[in-house]
Length: 263
Image (cartoon, rainbow, N blue to C red; front, side, top):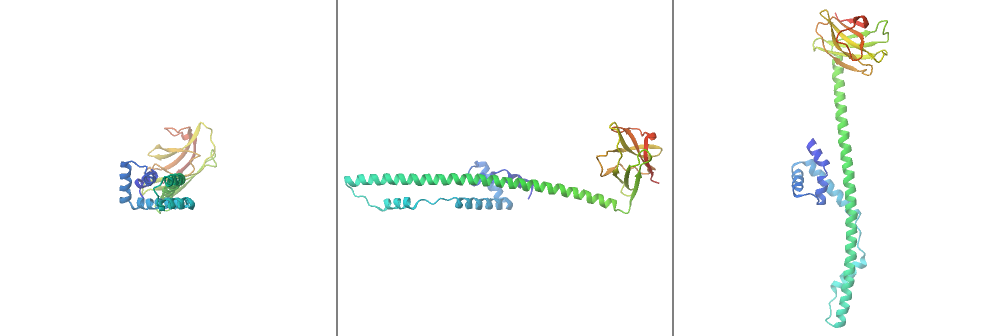
């Protein structure tokens, strides 16, 4: 079911159409959707069936005495006399009262039916919203799973080289793993552990290339997950240094805490 149909079913126009509350333009729109989209047609049939069930379950049978009185009055033949005229007047008065009672009963039933229909419409809308939210969650989970699968395929690729980077005496607990695929020209890093640093400092990873240190990004302790880093072709080594918070444009080689050769 596409987004257009979902939006229409969530608008409540279908319920309004069944209740006769739509404008001419809205009614034409609903009828075109029912005729054009099978999902909308099925939803319309379902709502119509539900309304019939609610109507039958809340139907109130008119008192038999009232109905019998009405039938008796209709079957009697009036006699044209003064006394019969008075009797006829009284009987028709009774008939009017009975008809009023029947009208009140019908009005009450209609009111109950309307309330039940409104409640049903609200419940249907809640279900539609929950299904829409669930579908969004499923889509997001599928995208996340697809991303994980792509990363796993890259890691298991025979062309992918794995490099374990461990910290020196200044950061003994530091450990990261770099995955580099020269054929596909991709680089990823898995931050396993990073020792605590003062708030004004951070870890930064560099690639040694042609005598220069090229910035590959800041390593955040809160970002302990596999992530992509820029691929540097012909890089000689990877280094991690301690830099001012936010990173540095030039590597502080004297603050190096880890290094590994790529050659």
